[in-house]
Amino acid sequence: MSDNKNKKIVILTGAGISAESGIKTFRDQNGLWEDHNILEVASPQGFERDPELVHRFYNMRRKQLLSSEVAPNEAHLAVARLQRELPNSEIFLITQNVDNLHERAGSPQVLHMHGELTKMRCIESKKVFEIKENISAHRACPCCLKEGNLRPHIVWFGETPFSMDEIYHHTAQCDLFIAIGTSGVVYPAAMLVDLARENGAHTLEFNLNDTQVSDSFHQHIVGPASQTVPKYVEELLNSTPHIT
Ligand code: BV8
Image (cartoon, rainbow, N blue to C red; front, side, top):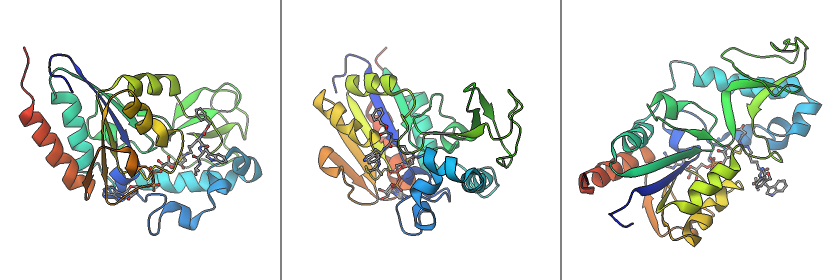
């Protein structure tokens, strides 16, 4: 990473960054997919087949997220601190997570490539609405007043993630690509490290253990994100001169 130009950094987070906030990951022990058939609750076909089941799946997760038991952890706070304090840098935060913990930690910019738990959208108009309470399939949509037209504003399997052009643009331009708490199982997020590396970026993976894409990373920092990420951010901030 040369020092005489703005450092371009892309950070990609997954469920592992929210694990220590009490939010279940997908594929770990007692993860979300252990209790649910993925395609029943996280696919358009599943929603078509049983919208009530899918609404219940997201209502349960939204209720937990908005309860007092869940808050951003030290890893979310460290990412927000880096975004705010690292001089002469452009940091672009992409999350696969549908929780709002990066925003609540104070991150000034967050791109939710897989959508957001606190949002719903109209199937017809595509209008997006903030939502805090439980939704049922009989709820009339606020824009067309039709029952059954509201769906979670979530990217399901087989659907195209949001803002892929912007994601590819930043990833292909960055000097440093950091992945925090993702298993590297889900595409196209899992291939972003290869795009960054092909374009000369240094690549760094934070995880509890090896993942399916660990071989694509130059560097690994192993351990719980709430400990490893703040330590790394502190060191990076202390080692970065303020180029005036
Ligand atoms: C697409 C929203 C085309 C839902 C999610 C065959 C058939 C059909 C499709 C496919 C196929 N093969 C491949 C595909 C594509 C498919 C896919 O990848 N399937 C996988 C399962 C093989 N992908 C898609 O369908 C995507 N769309 O491909 O469209 C396209 C392609 C390119 C360009 C344009 C269009 C859509 C995928 C999005 C699906 N929706 N989420 C919801 O949340 O309910 S995916 C879901 O998995 C979450 O978003 C989650 O974020 C994501 C990835 O999981 P992770 O975040 O990595 O979480 P995971 O539990 O897996 O891992 C946690 C990690 O954290 C672990 O490594 C663990 O060690 C670590 N960890 C745990 N604790 C800690 C920790 N690390 C540090 N500290 C800790 N304390």
